[in-house]
Length: 436
Ligand code: CMC
Image (spheres, rainbow, N blue to C red):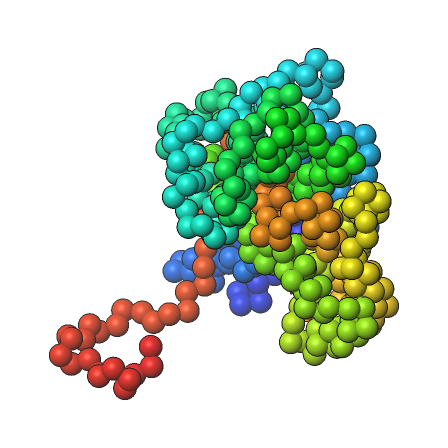
């Protein structure tokens, strides 16, 4: 018998099955042959939160959660954060190789020249309530781009897909900045093609009456590094959404809007905003032990801590911590940083966190930097969505090229009633007499 196989004995029938093992996995569909009789559907795998299920093959991002390793297309995240620009990394994620000089210049030119929004999109944004949350505005506006580029639905054409990918990467900062300007009641600022990707984003956020915006180079670089760190993270909740929605052949604007909606939740990209709220709630270093006690009693979660995959220090959090030091040299220190450092110090020594392998994740320090740079907390998750859209699109493109692609459609274990007798309205119990 081949050694790369799994032998299973079904104790219900006494039958034995041999299943192939490939890349450390067995195919769920191979389980279907394990049946008790003709009427039996066959065994399924039950994995409600995909805790131990590989949903695709991917060559975009590698994570070793036990060792705290993250690589994009085989390059360690530390090396990319040290040496590359965000658009260079975007090229790497999308095309699988680092661009040479002329490829990078052409790529930057293309992205820069797609940053404008159609006027109808600007007008669409004007319709939001004055205090609308920027993340909700971003999700809706990305979806609305589908109305501006109806040809995007031709997702079977690789050239068409690439055109939409460039548009999305270019327009995300423009929409994000407009959502912020709308929220604070300032007029929208149009893109400036002389500036880099992140400088232009800062320009669209913060230019007031000056004719030309000059970004602080340290802060612009810090933002670029943060964008690199957030660009992809294999099959997380929002990327899984992107692939799932994309698998129905929906257009990329609608798929990115869905992915961004998934990102907005506090257990995912929304955590950075929650971390800042938490640090404000704690208020001072001396209140940290009491807060940790509440976490251990199960009343609250320590936001920015823990990860489904990392059971070690999140390598992105390490880089962010270093970046924070550079930012604070420009902006001056931030009282929240002292509270965060104290939280981390106590948590990393505490049995509760040690036993559960809970370490700071990417969101723990990013919010503190964002705040120091001048971003409002409502914008933090938007700042995550801009770079992550590159990862979503790289994974979406990979999915379209995958010969095994099919519409995503999990199974269920049905727990409800069957074939009930219909009760006419006049015979049904009065309200309150039955529990729903
Ligand atoms: N604070 C306190 N306890 C925690 C935390 C936390 N932040 N995270 C996990 N635990 C506990 C959890 O209660 C459980 O304890 P027990 O075994 O006693 O029931 C144990 O650790 C295992 O946790 P889990 O809920 O099974 O882990 P998960 O893989 O389902 O959840 C997570 C991962 C990220 C949703 C979770 O750690 C969490 O809610 N963290 C806080 C929110 C956060 O920072 N999210 C950002 C994640 S990183 C960036 C991103 O994905 O966007």
